[in-house]
Image 1 (cartoon, rainbow, N blue to C red):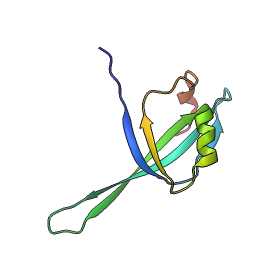
Image 2: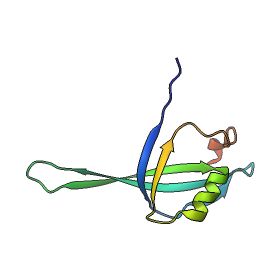
Image 3: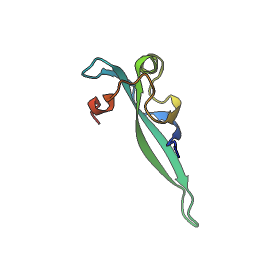
Amino acid sequence: MSSLNAVTLVGHLGRKPELRYTATQAAYALLSVATNETSFAKGQKPQERTEWHRIVTWGRTAAACVQHLGVGRQVLQLEAPPPEDAPAGAEDDIPF
């Protein structure tokens, strides 16, 4: 039986995406996305918590992100297995 591990994030960019290249010259962009959660405890003020996510995009998608997205922009990201245009083994070249 096969399975799929996917997450949908809706958040805001914390900084401008950076276009970088792997050792094999494959283009990728790093995005820093913030999501917020507010919890309401009885008799207390609402508590807001921010969680940061590092997203990687590849190829032409990476170039479009760098060109069109800026700090504070709301984004929707579906995290799933690497897309077909991601070079095999390229995840190993990304410095996290």
